[in-house]
Structure formats: C-alpha cells, structure tokens
Image 1 (cartoon, rainbow, N blue to C red):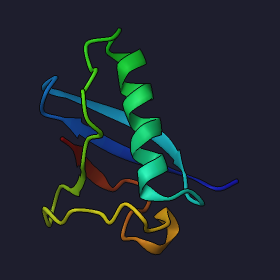
Image 2: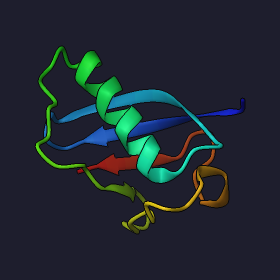
Image 3: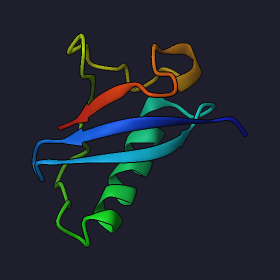
Length: 83
C-alpha cells in the first residue's frame, strides 16, 4: 500500500501534524483516519461532533468526499486543513 506524507493544519487546536495517509482510500475514509490520528496525537483534545471537512491549504478547495486520494492533488508534502 502506497502512503503519502501530508501536513495537516487543525485550526481548532491551532496545531500542525505530519501524518502518513494511504493513497488508495476515499477522502471520506482519509478524514475518518485523520480525525482518529489527531485525536490520539492531541490526547483527546480533538473530538468533533460531525465529520470534519478537508481543504487544500494553498487553493482553499474542498476535497470531494467520494474521490480516491490518488486521483486528487494530494501528494507528499501537500498541506491540508481539517476543519
């Protein structure tokens, strides 16, 4: 399984996290994985009531939940925002 290293900005925590994510999953699944990972990394401080949205940090474009990661613009080093 190929993985991609992304920099995730989480405004709710005012934090930045480097996270490896699988490139063969849908964005919806990636968001679920990121939410769990950041909840663990923040020792439970990140616990959104609804599923967050993932945006490209440079373009502010929202990623389609049904897109597969490898079909998006996300590559190693991409900066994303999880709101």
